[in-house]
Structure formats: structure tokens, C-alpha cells
Length: 524
Image (cartoon, rainbow, N blue to C red; front, top):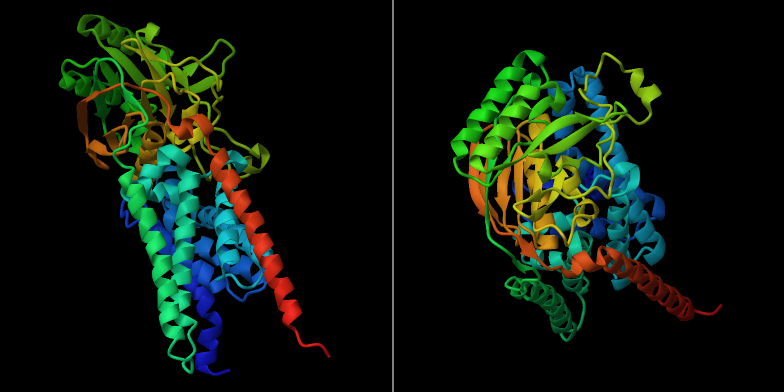
């Protein structure tokens, strides 16, 4: 085989890996959202003319690039903060990436099975968009869910963000995929013209490509025109909120020798906030069971009474039965609390515990035997306003935040992103939190240990923020909101129904294309 033939056979695989690898750049912190259209378009392009098996292979290679770059922070979490030896951390990270890559592989296989080999056709575009959306939704549920790098999340800086309150992240992701298909079909309209054609065909191809691009541009412009539309409205008086970001290194956070210094730093930051109505400390700011540090609890209750302040502080709590919870504790007690209901597997609880125990001594994850809180727990209340509280991972899932609405006037999310170092992860987490604010039309305050802490407006704008590895405070006013967005009322059902409908439509189109092809075959 010639050198040219060798590279020609491998070009689709290389293109799939590279397209997947650049896709994370569409997300925070880079945020070049057009890549969320271009990368899937490249995958759809190379799927054309393949077998089902090769389609799955190309989808898997795309996933290796996508998750290999997008969640590379897992390696740092395991080595620097989980205490794992480098080879084991690399093996676990590689295994996780390989498993996550099965999702785009499955989407590609389904699309090819429904549309046939003509993936650059209308049937191929519809099958690809529908299957990808349904598989993304599946990824958000299986094994507790992993919604990282969902295409709809990347649109916080694009005109399509105005669609998030209407159809949510999966609906917006579906629109992104359809636009990617339009772009590909426009390119194909220009490429499909033979060099020996009549002069009348070329204008027709240009016209078709122009129409397709115009439809895509009109979709983006139309979404942008929806930006001033507001589904929820201010209610009541603003609440002055202070966020503390103490920037405690993860290596010190759970060391008892640093407990007193950690708590003293948070108390100093609280004093710096001055007269605020609500003080928020991040997830596990108190890296111990709160009842085991009664002097801190007493001091905060005293300050709450003297300064007329409410507190929401991250700490561990324990019930009468001895169960431990990751909790956002309200002080005084009348504020109420939130126990984390959606725990992170292999971090806050251990599935497959007998297998994990084989690695005992090779990985050290503190407080990894927690109990989930109830899904229907009462909301904390600050100044008479119910608060939609969430802890870390919970803000990544619309279904978790949706439980607190429409009662909640604003959202509070606390997190300990120090596990991820100065990587993509803290910025990706903040972007997902901003999507929740957009989907539900509620402002959010987000307090983290090492960044990024932020005030997020009801339309998803980052109004103030403290970056990674910075120590300090944020003080601002949060205006409670009331009302419901269409997405709050309907959830993801319309988007998923639309995706399923596209699969049916794609199958019908492919069926008629195959039938027409058989009719055109010469009779022997």
C-alpha cells in the first residue's frame, strides 16, 4: 500500500479523534462555542459510507478525544488529592474515558443503523441529531449520571442560550446538532458538483448551499432576538449576600492539624463582609461534623443574633442513627438545612465496595461513606424567601434543581472544586451552574473553596466572580424571582420527544430512499 493510501484509510479515524479533542474548547474556560457545531459536523462527515461497526468505532474515537481532553482533570484529582500512585491514576482515568466514549459510539451506531450509509443526507442528519440527544440524556442518568460536555451547556455565550429557558440543555443540544447537519449539507451541496456538469447545475448547488446556510443563520439570529424575553420576574426586596472563598489547599482541608486555622480564616472573611443578610460558606468549609465543633456553632449563632444575619455553611452532619451527610447547614436553626441528595460515586459513596477495597491504601478519599439526603426535603428559608440549595454535583443536573422550584426565590450552590486544581473542571462546573440559572430564571450565588465563586444573574450572566486559587469575599445583592419558565413546567420531555420523532422521520426517509433505489435497478 502506498503512503497516500495508508493515510487515506486512516484519515477518518484521525479526523474523528481530533474533532472530539477540540470539542471541549467550546466549553468554559475557552468558550469558543462554534466548535460545538463544527466538531459534530466533522464526525457526521466521516460516518458517511461506513458500516455500522465502523460507525461505532469512529464514534468511540471521537469520544476518546472529547473526554480525554475534557475530563483530563480526573488524573490530577486522583494523583494530587486522592493519593493514588501515578500509574493507577492514569489507568483509572483512561478506563473512565474509554467508558464515556461508548456514548458517542452508541449514538453513531444508532444513527447509521437507522439512516443507512448515506449519513450526509437529510435522513443521516436527523438520525444523528436524534440519537446523540437521546444518548446524552442517557449519559445523564446511568450510574448516577455524568452530564459533562453536553452540547447544550456550551451555549452560554451563543445566541442559542435564549432557548435554554424554553427547551433546556437537551433541547438546545438538539438544535446545535441540527445546525451542524445544516452546515455539513451546505458544504456537501458545493462539493457534489461534478467537474463535467452543465453550467446550469452549479448555480443550483450554490442556491441550495445558500438556502441551508441562511436557515442556520436565521435560527441563530432568531434565538438571539429572544434574549430580552423574560419568563420570571423580580419578587420582594433584594437580599445582601456575602460569599467566602478561603482557598484552603485540598491537602490541608481534612488534616485535623489545620482545622482551627481553617475555621479562623472563614470567620475572618465573614467579618470582612460587613452588614450582609446572608453569609454563605462553601461545601465542607467545616471539614468535620458540625456537632463536634460546638464552639464554632455557638459563635455563629451569636453573630447571627447580633448582626441580624443568616448563615448557610457547608459541613458534615450526623443523625441519631449514626448516618453522615454532606450538608448545607442553616444558622440559626430556623433557616433550615439541605442534605446533599445526589452523591458522587467513588467519592461520597462507594459502589462495588468489595472491588474498591482491593485498592485500599492506594487511593484515599476522605468522607467517602455518606448517606444521601431525601429528595423531598424542605427548602431553607432566608428572610422569608425559600432557597433552592444544592451542593456541588447537584447543580450539574437540571432535575435536581427543578425539585426546589417554583417555590425557591433564588438558588445557592456550594462546592469544593479544590479536588480539580487549576484545570478545566472549576470553570466547567460554573458554566453548568449558569445554565441552571438560565433554565429556571433564577439568580444563583455560588460559593467554592478554591474558586470559581460567583454571582450569576437570572439570565445566566456572571456578575461577579473570584478565580481559581484566590482567597477573598464577594458581596452583592440577590433579587428573588418568581414564576416558571417553559422548561420548568415541561422539563426535558419535549426535547426527548422531538429527538425520538427525528429518529422515526429519519427511518421513514431512509426506507423510501432504499425502496426508490431498488426500483431504479435494471431488470435482468
